[in-house]
Amino acid sequence: MRTLAMVVVLGWCSGALAAEPSRVLTLEQAEVTAREQQPQLRSARAGTDAARARVDQARSGFLPQVSGNASYDVGTNRVGTSSGGVVSGGTARRFSAGLTANQLLYDFGRTSGRLTASRRSAEAQEATQAQTLEDVLLDVRASYFDALTQRALLDVARETLESEEKRLKQVKAAVEVGNRPEIDLLQQRTARANAQVRFIQARNAEGTAKAQLNQAMGVEGSTDYAVADVVVAPVEGEDSATDVLVERALAARGDVKARELQVRAQEAQVGATRSDFWPSLGATAGATDTGTDPADATWNVSGGLSLSWPLFEGGRTRAEVREQRALLRDTQAQQDVLRQQVRLEVEQARLAVTASREALSAAEEALVNARERLRLAEGRYQAGVGNIIELSDAQVEYTNAAAQRVQATYDLATSRATLARALGTQPHSVVAMAP
Image 1 (tube, rainbow, N blue to C red):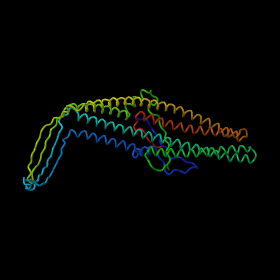
Image 2: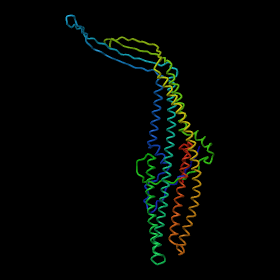
Image 3: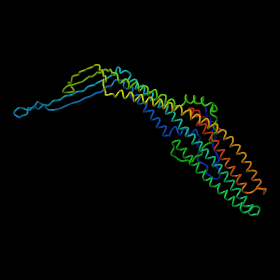
Image 4: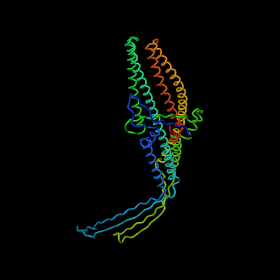
């Protein structure tokens, strides 16, 4: 499934009111950085390594268990007499060394069940790690699009401030020659001040958005960079019915696979615990070297079979089986909850994409109309048939329309990224192409 294509356009002009950032950050670079530095991913990888180690621990039950021991004792042999004296028997020395090996032969599936459970748990953790990567990348994309939004809104605020300053000069000149009343100058000064406030707020919002992007990438560093613009292509099948999209999501998402594996792991754990009711058969072998001195010690060997059967443990095994069965029901219930959550996420993301597309179309129309109204209002004011209130209102409407279009553009990008994640899209489906 190839669901996203992104066209990366490098570079942007920051204008005269802000310094040019020292570097440009692309979406691809942001994702690569997150893969390398995000603590959540490091934690997920560590969890996977621990789960694989538990598989090796469970497998060790099928292998021979060998232990060794050695001791060397020195002491005196002194015996008391009836008269209260002590007779010395000399010094006693004893050396002993040995090896003991135990091999499990059969335990009615106890060890194999635990090995199967640990394997399924490790596979579930691997799937969870993959889903964690998807979640981290979605967070990076959403933060990246928010940074783009705030950058574009800063450009709108900058353009508005420049327009208001230019208009202030024109109104001031008109008032000085008596073509306009002095109240127009006061009105325009207020409009310029308001535009300056909005520019300062937009500049702060952009800095905050880039700080949040740094956090999403797992970076502790400067925000002295610009984000490169991106265009998000439609998600494949984004207009399909919800049931179709849900089936795609259930077949592809890592968290769904992880939950299925957790159910299978718990089923194996139930079987392994139930096998504690039955005996365990093993073989033992040993060799010892015993004597008064290591140089002249005597070797002895032994071997045999052992059968261990817990006949009564106060109901402990039965209670453990009940516990594992209850945990299995809990895991199955969580699996059903996840399936319902997947449906909700897919439905919400699909509706958000549809709404964002429609909102963007309406915002573009509103921007065209607001631009034309501003042009007419400027012409009427210059011709002397319009007033400063009409012109200010037209400027405010144009600024709001421009900001609305910016927000709608990147809302659509975020909605499509969210839908891709809900469908279980892999990171390689994001394709960066030269402009």
